[in-house]
Length: 471
Image 1: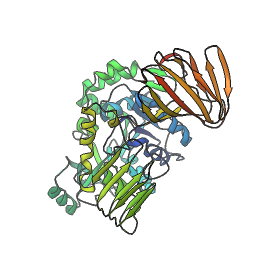
Image 2: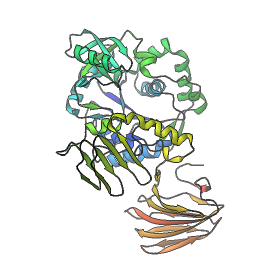
Image 3: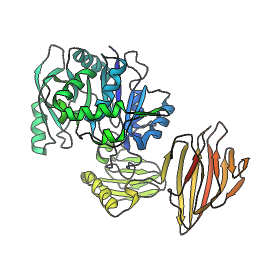
Image 4: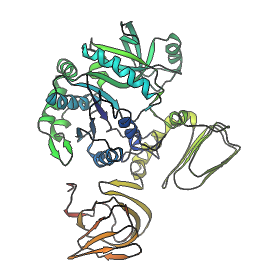
């Protein structure tokens, strides 16, 4: 049996702020290796004959990040499905199931969040065989993580009767996140697992369950898939139909009600990295129990996680802290209160501050840019254009731009002129002048851009031509 991985990567978690933000959430970050969590999810399954090309479900806002990270892994997706709005996991999986059935009525899906760490991938792949065999018999299988602590941040699954297959059980009940006392009881009993959010089942079984239990949801998703539009390498679900869909998780919509649910015990060193303290659990420690990443100097520091993205971070005489530095924000929080980070982000958003959602490092389909400095009537950016990529042909009503090439070769369109600039050469783009920046080379192009004018917002862009279909 061939499994079709359905990779869910549309979430916008903020509990790892300031690293993870709405515009660039944790699944696209490299937190515990050189690969992002999304890329690790892809690579965990690549090269296996029994695993088909993945089907990606993501938010429209992340489409070019997904495409670029796929390109860097060398993995091709069979489809990248774009949600116009978030409607939780049940509708997202339904859309993927309907697409899978179009090409194979007997398709079996492997549903995977893209923001988890699995420290024992070989054991996980072995468990896929158990789950697949059960799915072939009509079961809807979830992976229950063997708990290692009385964790209060996860939902739990109570196992029921054991199957003939070792490690496979019926599901007696799903339990919401418990308090610490109840979590200790669950741990000691040995009958409970953490709910991982990973599943294996036949696509037609899932659609049948939705038709029985969530007909309005299924009808809306069917319309959204039927009216979907192809856009470059993406498939856009119809925005009106999908927006009319009820929002619900797969557990609430199906798994807690179906008579076909089963759970396989998974002792796979799993972590959903749901907080800074969770990230600290999987990172290497020094002799003082510290995790130090980046340019960090400490003295008399114990049990701290300190991460520097840009500047030197120095700490002395502290313990049990998380300190995270980025180009535009610094977080200091006690390890026992890392769930409170979401309250900080909520306050930033309530005060209209973009730092809760947007990085200084912004990704675009052609590459990325980074804000270096800004003040009244000026802004400085570092722009990196990927080989062969080009910005749109555009103009600005309110700002002029100076471009200085610091690495690579640029092809510049300025009005009716087209010319090349090499390293240390520059040009000037006046207000309301049409222009385009391209990288004709095989190495990344790096440009310093100095903007000046009365208004410098990103919405002051009029596009005339764009290879990526942006308005």
